[in-house]
Structure formats: C-alpha cells, structure tokens
Image 1 (cartoon, rainbow, N blue to C red):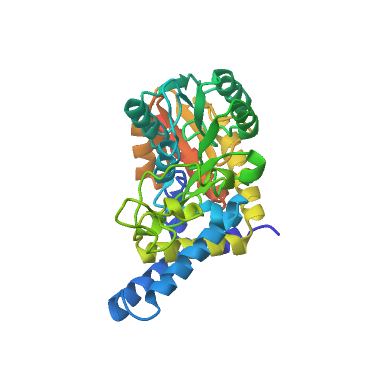
Image 2 (image 1 turned 90 degrees about the vertical axis):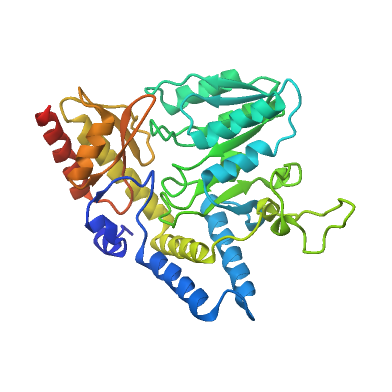
Length: 389
C-alpha cells in the first residue's frame, strides 16, 4: 500500500517548515520519538535513575532495540551491537583485526572520514599498508567495485568501503567484493551511513563481515545511537578494542589475575552506559518505520529520488553526477557557483541540503517523507541562484 505522505509529514513536523532535503546528515525526528525521549527524561527526573525495575527496563529497551536493528538488516539479534554512530562501529571493526606485518587495508578515495580515519590510525599503529583506490565522482557502482576488486591481494586483511557513497550517491555492489576478499582470506567492513533506512539491506545476501549504521540519518532517530552488525563467524575472532562491564559474559566473569570471559554475542563490543532516553527515542523511530512498512519506504525513496534527479538534470547549468541506480542521494553542481555558497543561499530560502568537499559538490537527500513540492522548491531555488550569478 502506498504511503500517506501527508500524514507522515504531520508526524515529522520539521518537514512542514522547510524543504527538508538532508537526511544524509540528520533526518527529521518523529513526534513518537520526541515523546519517548521526553517521557524517559521525565521518568529520570521524577522517579530517579535507580530503584526497583529501572535497570531491568533499560535492559529490555536495549534488547528490543537490537531486535529492531536486526530485522532491519536481516541479521540475528546476537549479531547486533548498539553503538553511538557509524564511526563508532567502523572503529570497532577496523581495530578488531589481528594485523600482522605486511597486511594491507583496501579502501577508496571517496570514503567518509568515519571510515578512513580509523584505517589510517590502525595503519600507523600496526604498520599496515593502506591501498587507496582512486575513484572518480562519475564512476558508477560496477566500475567502483571492479576497481576495488582489482586492488585486493592475498595480503589484504580488510576491505573498507561504503555501501552508498556519501559524496556521489553511488550504490556499491558489495557481494562480488566480499567474494574476492573472502577467497583470499580477508574481511569486508562496510560504512552503511547512507544505506540503512534508504535501501533494502540483507547483510547475509551481501556477505559482509561488519556493517555499521547510524540512527540519526535515514532512520529518523536521535543523535548518539547506532548499531554494528558483526557476522556470527566473526564474533569471537574480532578483538575487543574497548572493554568494560557490558563486554563481560556477566559481572563476575573476571579475576585479579587478568583473566576474563567476554560475552558470546555482539554485546561484547558494547562498553558501558548509554543515555536511556536516546535509546527510547531510537526504538520509537524504528517501531514507527516498521509500522509504515520498510518496503513501502524504500519504494518511496526510489521514486522521489528519481524525480529529484530528473528535475535537477533538466535545469540548464546543472550537472548531475549520481547515476540512475541511486539510493537517496543526488550529487550535482551549479555551473559557476561555489557549492558552499549555494547551500547557504538555499538555506536562506528554506531549502535544506548540504555541500561536500574534495570534490566540491552539492548533495540533496530525498527520503520517504519528502514530496514533489520539496523538489519544486529546490528547483526554483537553484534557478534563482543561477539568475543571481
């Protein structure tokens, strides 16, 4: 059943005050999530943060949240660790490898700092060689995957790539990359900041080892919560970078001789206290999205993004870089106009997109709550900017 966009936009009121076209940075917060956060805060204020049942309720929310993330990704609950954001998950995956002298990490030139910074730090500490595959903004997903596959060697310990490029919007076919790196004994860690909530994901079909997602972007959750999928076969072989009470099998699973027993699930990568109202808000957002229907959401993202791409491509002086096989991002430039200045000018008009650098581009994010009027406001804004040159 098609989504009721009018009702959805009432549920996310930020979409009624502007052309909200930047889910790739932060999605709008739904009323249900805001209410859950407010209720949890009020409970902390009035009842306190300790007392009978409070800890147990927090554990139940976390367990429920892992289950919702697991269903979203096609994983088992035990394969999900709650994190703070995508970068948190990427650090866990990248730092968790048992590197040896001569190992290599393969990544691309268009990765987000949340992916390549953990790579660079690990390389400096362990002496690992980083092979950065040059990718052009005009490369499609198949071309990008072929370049990555060509760079994988028997010394490749880890491939670090994005499922959807945060700059070009290209959807990368991950399965052939996974097949090549696994055949040579390596692993695949994926930055899923621009895919989770925008396109259908099945981590088993993709054959990935790690898949790090945020909550605040396409999933319309609050800041400060995300998830990491760790493939079952990788749980015990992935080293713990951070460790604390939550990472233990139970509170007594250690001694003063340095011996300890980590948990057997992905919870072993969780460290300590997370702000409970944030978890409540994220759970409410995922429950809302699940009730709407993920398939209907993905179909709507595809439709409105295709409409946006076609609209942008039809404007004289605009160059669109994102190919038709897109997720929810469309990258483009306006001839003779600095992207930073263009994004700022559009913001003054109530059209919220963003610019990215290296290469310098404008990026629009179209999600299921956007309608054709948002795209029309963007079109008129761009035409006004062109007329002001």
